[in-house]
Image (cartoon, rainbow, N blue to C red; front, side, top):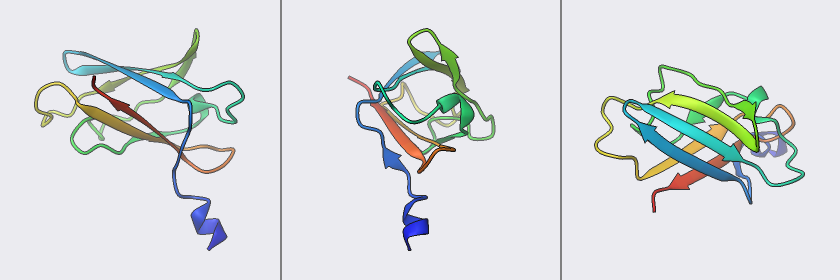
Length: 104
């Protein structure tokens, strides 16, 4: 049971996900808290919000100044601007991580 529980995605307190829509592209910027034991560039990213990101077009974070950036393709069935986006990031150093953005 412990091995299975270790595979359940866990929220990363203090992580900040910023989302900016530009046409059919979604620009993502991820800032992690100091000392976070993960490298988002080393993991795969999975959209957890239905019909937000085109799941057939994988994307990865890359290290940039002040955090990590990625560009995803918006799902063709998404209606209007995104209101929320949850991502699961695989973590080679432990449990997968979840980060969530909500429109203001």
